Image 1: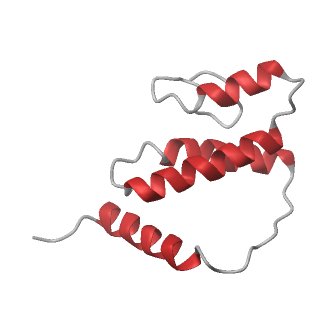
Image 2: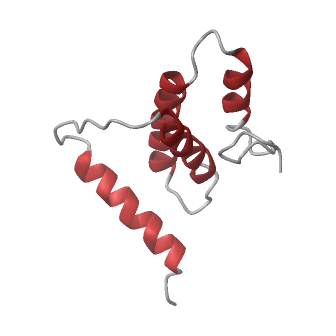
Length: 100
């Protein structure tokens, strides 16, 4: 039986994540909009049933860190949109925050 391309990709990602756990940190500078795109991508990838539990947890952790950096505490509307993106039943998966 052959492995599906999706499950092979998930395994490759999980293996890379394990290798990088003890690597030195990498610094990035992103526009707020680009960080928002990464946040919404992490939210969507967390729903991928082919991901290992460890990789899904790592994506959630990283996504939350991005969310905390992007959403100012005084912007409750943006925080609410970002928070709803973690709910698989939410329609706010678009990078713009608009409903589909």
